[in-house]
Amino acid sequence: RGLAGLRELRLRHGVADDAKAEILATLPDIERLVLRESPLSDAGFRAIARCRNLSHLNVPQAACTAVGLRTLRAVPTLRSLRIGGPNLVGREVGEAVATLESLESLHLIDVAIGDEGLAAIAGLPGLRTLYLDGAGVSDEAWGRYFQTNPDVHVHVDQAHHDRDPGRDHD
Image 1 (cartoon, rainbow, N blue to C red):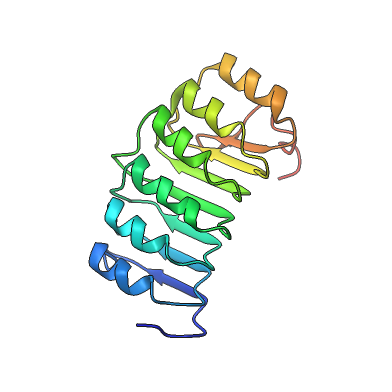
Image 2 (cartoon, rainbow, N blue to C red; image 1 turned 90 degrees about the vertical axis):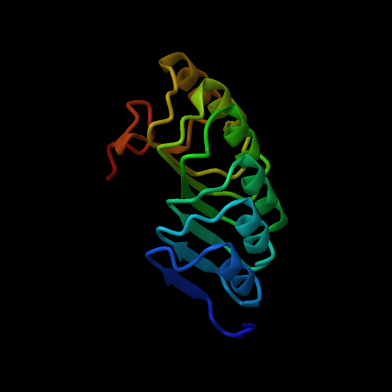
């Protein structure tokens, strides 16, 4: 608890549950958290949102909902979010992510946000990279997205989108 100077922490195999997230929230200098196989619920995300220096959060097997995601707007330094989980579904996820205005990089892992969720994300002012897996977005919605966000680097289901401006540079 309260360990100063720790900037990055990687935990695996369900080590970080909601109770342990309360401990993580006491780390004053934490910038990067990678919490694999850590099914944090909305309560765990409320705790993580107290990490005011957090810039990168990777929770690929979360148990939170869009409500938990919304709590992250309390972290003004959050630049990168990589997240997945069975309770993250629908337009509400896109709307929750759209409140995270400091994001530059977003990766939603098997999160079915659909066309309306993508439309919500389209308003993120500083987003530079967007990776969506299993998003269920139509070609028409992608067309609208690229009209307003022509410079965003986009991967869909682990491949460059054919309209991605950086598709020839990897």
